[in-house]
Length: 111
Image (cartoon, rainbow, N blue to C red):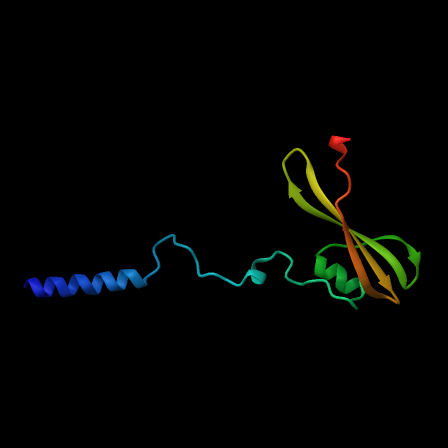
């Protein structure tokens, strides 16, 4: 009788060790799949593809047709009192993305 109880408890322990506990952690995913922007910018994208990758419309800053500079205001949240926005400037040459620069700017609160 003792052997049957020990065997049954050993089976239960092995099954419970393999099962995921209730409310436990889900399996780990690769780091790049957890990013909010998993469609990266790439050289050679046109303005429409760039806006789709960033998930927001681009604002024209200056430049001749085909060689423009656009601005994407990225709202990154922040506290409830002060919004946290980054400015991302995008340089297009011949209608294709040639470079970008993120400008953190000056915080007006500390000037």
